[in-house]
Length: 272
Image (cartoon, rainbow, N blue to C red):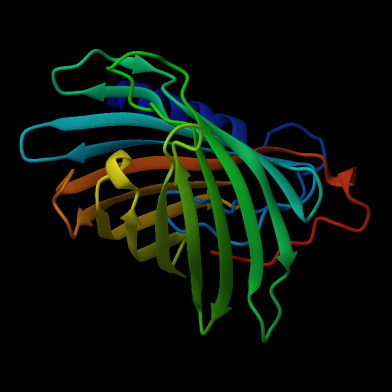
């Protein structure tokens, strides 16, 4: 798995770094990563921008270790509408089980309802559906779920805060159960492209489909250019129903931006 992640990060870095030819420099656009925190920003990259997030996570429990590679692809159709498709298990490896490839996919739109101002936060909402892509008892994703999330984001006194509330309807096609999610993430720019993140979150409910989970996440980030950001950190579980801790590393990058896609668009407030 570390070799897989290294290849992904290397390819991302090559795709995101500016070229060395004589063409005009690419317009400035900044990554707006939803990972590694549970809470996501209410803001999106400008119209015409393609943003990719990928990473590696290792969940540790008392008697087993589960590893997975994650991926999320986002495309902003307009400055207010973004389409998303991703998977939490591009590659999934569990102790004592076979390696699974592309186990589950989620997709749907995210809509920005209000842009951040000096006095008010950015507000957005998303509606996603999670679908299984494998069958059998060894599949990681086994139910069809519907997720409805609301996002608030605000920059204040050098701190960026993201607050999310979510309703996940698990197994919507057979005996559905509701799971409620709340998460608050704060991040701050440090020096020379480095940043720090701190988050608290909780997942409540979900019936027989989900374990009670809550945690405190701490991470560091590094952005060598506005178009690429690396992250590394850990997540300590407050309840030990399913895990004790999660370690993660990853990268978010913007390989493509068609600036003319939105007349008068392309302006983006700084996040990190």
